[in-house]
Image (tube, rainbow over all chains, first blue to last red):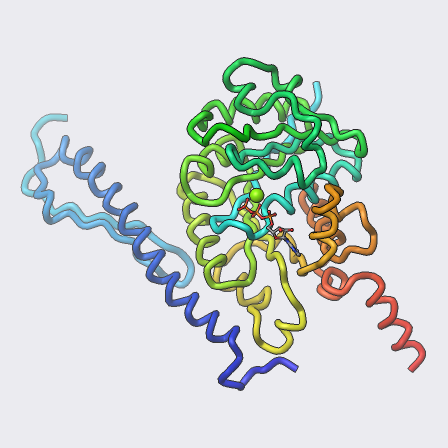
Length: 82
Length: 269
Ligand SMILES: Nc1ncnc2c1ncn2[C@@H]1O[C@H](COP(=O)(O)OP(=O)(O)OP(=O)(O)O)[C@@H](O)[C@H]1O
Ligand SMILES: [Mg+2]
């Protein structure tokens, strides 16, 4: 019989430790990826609009069904050209 | 013109979880099913696949000789005389990963897939250049892990890197499952690992002494009908070529003999 309910079932300990460490790992990996996207977006959007690079925000927002990449670019002004 | 084959990389993150064992067995099983198969050892500097396959005495040229232009792919391929259609492209033993670039690796894989149904690339452990080389020419990835915290953690990292690289839907082999330990709650089960990694399962391979015996002999376990791990790898090979093979845990875990004796017991009592 499976040792469920038993506090000593070591696989439950393994599973919980794994879940926690993966949350940290994935958050860290995402940070690098979001920073990269942010840097490039600031460069591209900055060509067309007057941005304050410090106020740009890039994040992943999750619902049950999907993850959405959300970027906010507070504008100082739009350029006249284009 | 024949249809181009597919290039499949076998990778893991953590070392020693069974990539080379899986490559040798899946490749041999696919050849036994009638396919033309090229195995590529991408673990440059630590070549292993040749000894696991029992082909270590037949090497003349290797992968590095090919990318450096000293040999053609055809010259470097070793034909496995035991299994019709099975070939090995060995790694160099005395060079390092930087001797090959991802672009060169991709061109070797492209050349091979024009001529083979399956090109199976055995990746080195880690996430550095050797791994980058191994995945460069592949359109499909199989990740091997054991049911341990560190191995699953590294598998998760690899899955993330593969996704970032645009690899479509990697699949998982869970290797070295010990059913006794799972039953008493001391080893993570298939469901635990699949739930955590959120990835497609390709196969479950039990811990099996026959793997060690077959590696000693240089004779892949799929050739032995008594090996439970061999049976699991045969099922994996069939799934890779598109067959739907149910995950019969009892089949894969306990083997035919145990299943037969169970049936006998059931019918006699
Ligand atoms: N299902 C199994 N049952 C028993 N032993 C196994 C099983 N799978 C692999 N092994 C053993 O585990 C060891 C490591 O396997 P293998 O060399 O295939 O791993 P690897 O992932 O290729 O390692 P590396 O990262 O060093 O390339 C070998 O001694 C092999 O015989
Ligand atoms: Mg190996």
